[in-house]
Image (cartoon, rainbow, N blue to C red):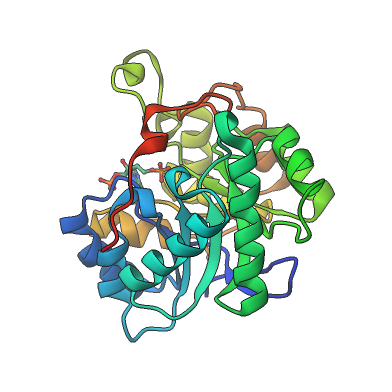
Length: 289
Ligand code: A2P
């Protein structure tokens, strides 16, 4: 059974979603089909991943919660309304369950706000069931909320035991925003070379010990930790064994002590990009089809 979360506007969302960041387009449809086969009912993609079309192929005719993201080059009011049309066309859906801004664009925050106003319109018109943001830090949320009418339902952020962003989580909670974890098992190494000095949390001895005690894998323990904290998580895999492994997390429970030990692993160091820094790829154009 997949646990469900109720968003701040009453929409129900399966807590554990299937992620497709860095899934090559040619492998994405098969991975999503496999995820649906083993029970996932929530898929998270993004215009910038270049695989919305393949997600669309796999979900056609199914009843699955679809989440996608507007890329920065499509920020602005009219641009974002148009980006919604692009996304629905590629996904082959009339309505998107959860549409979020991929990240704040510090070098063009006015356009970020205008993009969010467009999400509000899509929500009012019924094109989307819920709206949100991604990679927003506390001050981005404060600045957005000063100008917006609708509180985001979700803030999707990098979140794993080595980087759990307690302050952003707190800000989310203060505003009634659900925190959703990307890279929930810390599996993605963003920058080539970074991984050489970095120990993956998948190899962490504390996680390993807790996994051993439950006869589970480190990834399962981390996903359980995410869910027991009331968060949504969207692990990515293109490997059928790991797709199934990452969904098999509803049959055991971590103790308070184990949860606390995992909480204490935070090192405050990102694997992914810093939302405060503009990036070259902000200007990458999202194709029409
Ligand atoms: P793969 O697609 O080959 O399974 P995250 O979503 O936390 O960023 O993790 C995604 C990364 O971790 C991918 O490289 C993925 O590779 C790998 N991965 C996914 N599930 C597991 C798992 N259960 N155990 C180990 N590695 C995993």
